[in-house]
Length: 364
Image 1 (cartoon, rainbow, N blue to C red):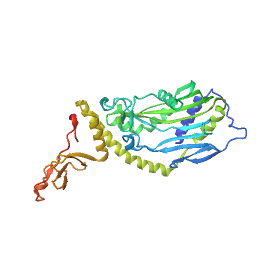
Image 2: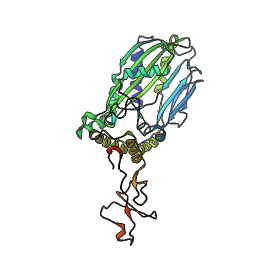
Image 3: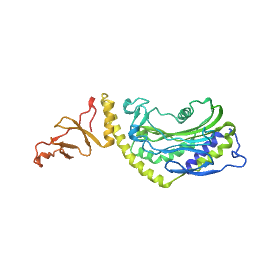
Image 4: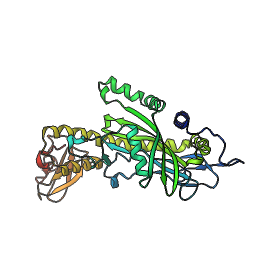
């Protein structure tokens, strides 16, 4: 976290150089900052100016409600610090949002649709994504001027180092083209809002996770102040950002939770890759069947046909074969040649085949 803070501070200084050189505090007598917990999970502490409002914090995406797990793996942070109710002076840490690459599923999921909880969206470079974030945050802004726009090599280098192990592994197993790629950019923007002229700094990074068929923004933050006081507030904003200290107990607990959630995600992604291969061979597979298959994979289930009733029944996928009687007894096995009637003195056990998929969709 310390190194990231150094890069971010250098990035802000580079962006705002020439926009004013005053380093005096916001008032002639100084300003006090209080170390404050992130409100929701006490994931970290940071310095907050006395009397400021703090809103938001750590939040988590429910995979079932989001339509899939891709944004549910990591805890997210959406935190706003502001001097007053309207945010005359404000700093915001924005959440990392995962998107699915356009073309996923051999094009069955169009742009703007949702794939496993992630919006399908063409990947953007950091500068384009930054502009989109700014306009989404300030839909009523007028007279918008981008004073400075820069790539941030220090941020890119930092992210590349963080992904070096995975990239080396991809290269070793022959899929170097799937390596993680990074981009980062910053901008200084002036605009009118609610009758006042503001100056605002934005920073964001982009991670292209091609091996997982996804991409996301990361390390995204902004801070603003009225144009006439921006340069007085800038060093205070740097102090706030550099003051972040993570709670080690929270970090360990989050790492354990991420590993558990990653197991689910990898199961879904492996199923997605298998489906992609099948789609390439058979384009008549319906979206409903594929989404149903993904749900079954996520919940560890399969659909079988009861040979006594003809009905489709959902049951565990932990065994390869399932047998049922007309009275509802069930026998599970992984052995293809075992018939429970032979050793259970029964004649009514019948194997339940997996339900055939519509349109030629593959079964597991």
